[in-house]
Image (cartoon, rainbow over all chains, first blue to last red; front, top):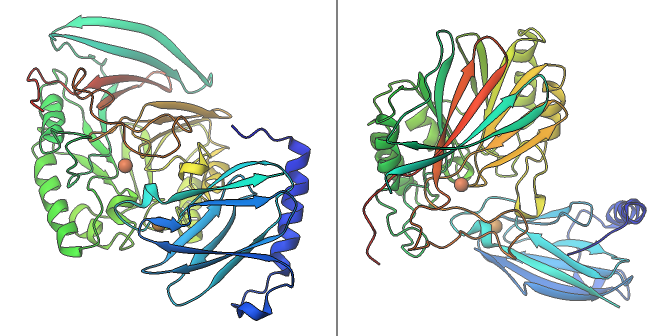
Length: 128
Length: 302
Ligand SMILES: [Cu+2]
Ligand SMILES: [Fe+2]
């Protein structure tokens, strides 16, 4: 599956941390987005993400913007330094990512949400 | 089939090694006979009572009962039985959850052995922080001692973020302070404490903190469930053993795109389901694990 070099991981992790810290914790209005960032809207509901397959470009910052249609869900990408967010109904959560390496990264709901939770997954495909 | 295949694993706590002694074919229902101060207990896990997809398990209504009957038919009865979580399949309806818990408890109380230790799984406790579980099965974290072995039950499921939490970690640290570094400890929990496969949520978010607390202790063994298959792993000198489930098996970590049950195989009913006995050797910090299939001679009509 995904092959990664250790050193690259560290760089990636540091990049992620600095990026995450630059994302305001309060929900932004769409017009306040960092200019030029591509925004991908993702809807979470029992027990799926729509869309569940997301294609992004290597090295290009992308903001994933989440809303929930029913209850609290989670979102995490373990292979991207465990980046995560909580998706609450009535709120918008955002995660800004820059992935420097081509590959497929699985994500899933990491807040137990009911009978079907185990299937609440998706993937980010990073292309050249 | 009237012949049981049992895999015997000898697990040496001190030597941090797992020796596969071999597979024995035994006729009938001969069981492990422990010596005088040795003792035997049984681990059941992941019964998911309330699950009802016939493509996954057409015998969903009776598999748990068969496991209970099988334990009752063991020649050497265990001193106690421990149930390592996911007793019930989750539901959003609190009344249905309680009904499932009451039914499962009644079935499990059919055990001849009257000492039963219950643990919660995320299916039991993840949606209501363990409220219903505590009504039916008691506390979600606790300790008990048996014939010189300290058992510690860790709850990594009542918190929906798959965490033990700082309060319970503090409690764990306090409990461990009462125990000598070379005494025998068996940790019982639902999820793996180590990062088995975070992509499938097969981990405990702060499990490393629990392992750090356990590390100074020389004779620690962890038994858990959650992954619905046998699995053996070492973190330094601490072995971690996952048990099979009693409703459906799950694929090996990462072997499938999704973490979905392995469908029922009519050619091999109950394949991948089972339970284990653990023989604790008094003389050495050793445990002999015996894995049992679900016995059933009846073929299921599909
Ligand atoms: Cu979910
Ligand atoms: Fe389970």
